[in-house]
View 1 (cartoon, rainbow, N blue to C red):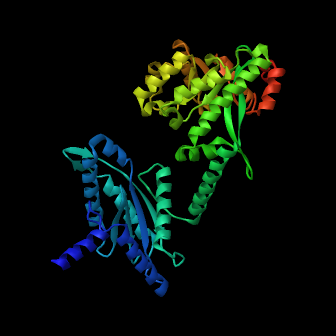
View 2 (cartoon, rainbow, N blue to C red; view 1 turned 120 degrees about the horizontal axis):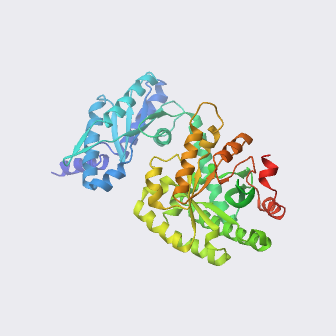
View 3 (spheres, rainbow, N blue to C red; view 1 turned 90 degrees about the vertical axis):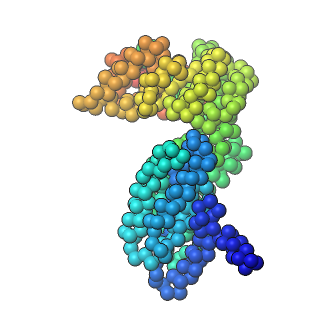
Length: 451
């Protein structure tokens, strides 16, 4: 009995309690042995696959954790049956699995197995009477004598898997050294970003928004920049995704709102002719979903003295569609404050028209992809923009065309009676000093830039 008990304890220590598959400990042991054989013989190549179930959380949230466990067991069984007897499939944690493929001669054979895993996961699973369909992302790392530990090759397979996820999921990626360099760069960026928050290395730039009908400045869109100590000025498309992922977007976002309000109010005081100058601020998904977002906006307005109607919050459609009821509540509270609400990048979402009236925006910004195509021959972009303008105006909304870069685009937008525009043709984003000069000596944009 004692022997059986000891054997059971050893088995339990090396196997996953839910699926019965080898666990991380047993996989590491087998990887270690296989790596030693590879270094001794310089042959017998192998590969590691890192597998993650896409959107598995949605299964747990919608059907319950018990259903999620059943799905993991069913997937593990299919995965095990797919492989050769000498291969190892292990459950690492949650919805993550790894496969050790031995005696691999060519990458082609590994890719074939990865594709079979992708095909396998798309087949129907029947869970508690519910038809469930899933997809997987797979990362592949081919073994070389350069790998010294199991952690290293599993790490690289994991990196490749995340690359597959960024490609849109339901696909595989093969690890290469460039991926590792990019991951290290992202890690350095994250470390530097944490320091930047503490050292206040951020500044705001301001892109003018122009009234086409009056030829005058009506406001600015505020855009954050990072003054990196070594790399110089970094634009938000390079660091905002990292800030979102790490949660640093929250302190950065609060500062962005406050600084935009403070600067706008300062300009209003300095230049009475711009007493109603408006400032628009982009808001990320994580910031908008923060429970104190309305209170923080109200605090920034109160502390800076900026009138709520001079602040506009820009939101992309996808942000609001993630949690519709919660979004509606926050939008109503912001509207009650008097804050303007803009839908950004309009036309790129999948349900723009159906939600325009529901969310009751004040303004919409036509995405720059439409503006770019406006002067191209033989396309319907002009008709699309005209329809957007007409629809928005019927709903009582202001319209702003983004990404205006040529004289021809300006002229076409005038013909289409687009009220407001912004883009490089008029001005690139400006630092506060340069923006102040425009306010002090405002050009007549229509005459100076278009005629």
